[in-house]
Image 1 (cartoon, helix red, strand yellow):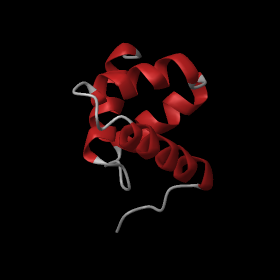
Image 2 (tube, helix red, strand yellow; image 1 turned 90 degrees about the vertical axis):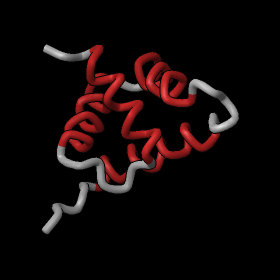
Image 3 (spheres, rainbow, N blue to C red; image 1 turned 45 degrees about the horizontal axis):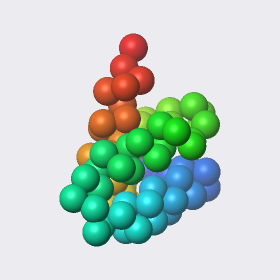
Image 4 (cartoon, rainbow, N blue to C red; image 1 turned 60 degrees about the vertical axis):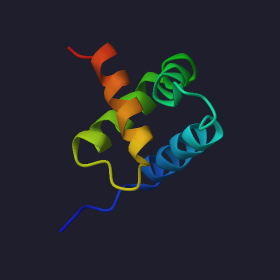
Length: 77
């Protein structure tokens, strides 16, 4: 049984999938998406999407999951 993401995480999933889909023309879609999150998302948003991805990343496009993993490496403690 999987846990349903909260409304805020659901919104982040939607936003990140849109970022990925808007950059599919770019050969570096994963890096572009990770950079976008790094530059424009609040730290609290980044932490939520990283946590969600660590729990399986339900709802995220494959490239979105990869982008979050790139982002997670930057914020590794």
